[in-house]
Amino acid sequence: MRNLNATSIREFCAQNAIYIVLVALIVGIAIYDSQFLSVTTIRDILLQSSTRAIIALGAAFVLITGGVDLSAGRVVGLTAVLSASMLQMQDYPRRFFPDLPDLPLLVPVLLAILAGLIVGLINGVIVAKFSVPPFIATLGTMVIVYGANSIYFDMEPNESQPIGGLRQDFSHLGTGYIGPGGPYSIPYIVIIAIVVSVVVWVILNKTRLGKNMYAIGGNMQAAAVSGINVGLNLIVIYAIAGALYGLAGVLEAARTGGATNNYGNMYELDAIAACVVGGVSTSGGIGTVPGILAGVLIFGVINYGLTFIGVNPYWQLIIKGLIIVAAVAVDIRKYLAKR
Image (cartoon, one colour):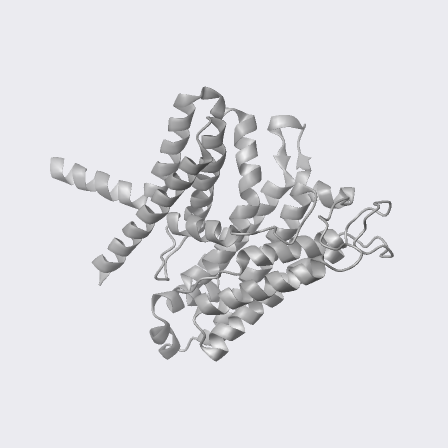
């Protein structure tokens, strides 16, 4: 009986390690400073983690197929600049497009998301049709997108000046909320992240695309033999990921009230790290939405919580790195055990 209980405890800990780590982090910081458990702090962490969650969910699409997408951060920057450049106030002295009339909010937002989708589509075509490894394909598009965004950002009359003076309706998208205000309000951006999470969960668990995604990540050759159109599925998957990066870029510009061509720098690494820590296998074929969100929250707690208690930012990087390495080591051990 004792051995049985010990085995059950080990299995429970192994299956729920990500949630145990998250709770342990929160409890540890709260013991150091009880103010960390305030409603305001929790709201701030959720607010800051929302766009990161959307990016991570997009990155997870690619990781589950056994690939990797390094272009995510630069797509976020591109779509932030695109949406912000078209949604400035008429009386702002340094308008990106001085003669552009006020467009309906939805038009620039959809155009920016479409731009992200197109980049993802290009990634998918390069990987699926030209058999370029995802790492190389997305590394190339990452550089191309940053270059194109920088050229756009440097156009006259802007000439590489930070884009500000955003319209109130656009800023409200990133800073508005439902509720009485203060700590007990629910930000729109958090609601959007929850809706996106639900949609992604449905895609992964209830659609043919989701089943194909796991099959391709588990064994691409076997998936092709079983009748799955691997190429077409990969193109669709990368396109969806790009659209999610585009949405995150729009929300990031709205949340911060501006944009530059350097927005989103290194976001892809944070997204990949959150996915890996959240249980998405680096070998493909494994990953869940709750795990991904837990991974995002772990890094959100680390970034916000350790700053909250005054831990040196360099120590924060060391802690994040150790967590990432440990997560990958556990993932590899699981993979080898199954062989």
